Length: 448
Image 1 (cartoon, rainbow, N blue to C red):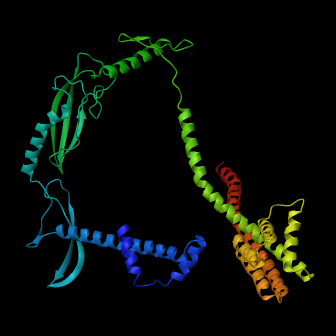
Image 2 (cartoon, rainbow, N blue to C red):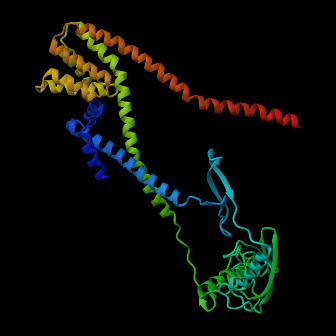
Image 3 (spheres, one colour):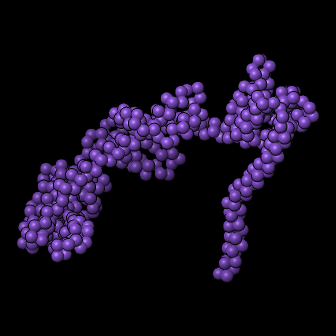
């Protein structure tokens, strides 16, 4: 991506995006204290760089696809399209159709079937497949006269499009997949007839051969495990009437002992704990966002009361600073009530003014720290009062009180509508339950 960023930086020297000022303002809000020009430039470099990268990638992919399409373009000679070879399946060809030299239909799709074998060719192929079947079926076995490993019964030929269905004469010895049954224990072996039904289209041919199957060969550990299972089953049958099931203590010359397995519950708890920790870690961001939203709602809820108190005190003759401090200190000295984010910000502002910060700067910072539109406007109003004088401040505050209470009523109506919407689902579920309680007995009475 670095090369695209460099290219984007060079392009930005020749033109200025229209939204530069808007982006600069938003970047300054998101990154206070940093250079707005640098932030804006980095923003547009990344934005334009990604756009250039996508266009270049699109050009490259388009070129590759075009080259592949050209190479795969179907050759039409003497009004004929070459078929796929045997077993390769049909192919769909897209053609432009011309009538008397003029384009008649664009991108017409034609299905071209694969080449079909003649009857003589099919008979020859059946013979080749049948000749190769015995060797293919044996798998790990040496000969058909001694089969003690699972057989391999292919469903189709590897060389030709021939399907194969298998019939087995004795399913007590072999299952439909050619596996030797675990219950087969005849050491003398048993002869099994295998019938392979070969088919191509509507043509069919059967091929029959015989194998002599012996009990399944097992590796030492596999055989021991199998023998242990059999011994456990035998002991279970022998002790079926007892209070406890006995277990074999010796199988194939090996002494056996038993111990209860340790459950894997601890692993599950560990995995669940790790998952819960990850969910908690990632979910904290959502909680923080929810807390910030809750703070804003509470500050907006307190706003009408705050401006109302300030207006009342200013109208009674107090200066702006005195009224501001009285509201904040009264909140501090209260003995009950919830914590108010807005009042806490007012207390911080009072402390800053007492420590020497100018009223003008303190009120502006108050609005910025609150980060809520209403309080930002209030801070700006107080700052203008310090700069231009208190003339008209009381009228502005009275207007702000009126607007704040109107907005509070509108928010109350909105929250009421949202609460009503949330209740729709429970109400619908209750209605469904009531309808079921009424309708089901009625239908049952009809059936009676």
